[in-house]
Amino acid sequence: MTEIASPHITHPRILVLGVQPGGPGTRPFRIVEVDGEVAGRATTVTEVLEAAAAYGVTVEDLDDPDWVCWVGGDRYTWGTR
Image (cartoon, rainbow, N blue to C red; front, side):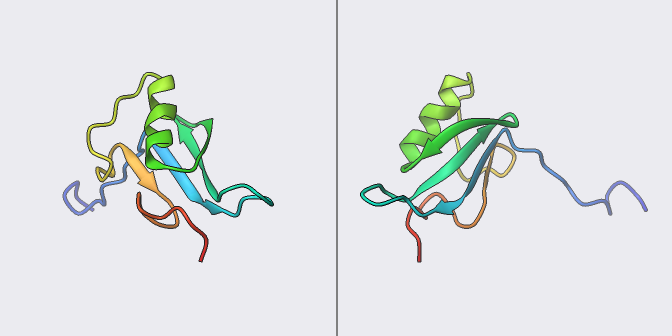
């Protein structure tokens, strides 16, 4: 197998997990990991950026898979189905 035939595997700095249902009276949320550490929960994309900034990570493109991995949806997915 040559290098060109190898798949490109990224290890993004930010991992946003799938939507979790909130408890009674709370909104659904997503767990955010930055550099492999759980940074907290987010209910909006702004909170994802704030969590990243708290770890010193500035994201310029939320759709760049080298920086952000959205699991179970994209940056517009914030509710349960």
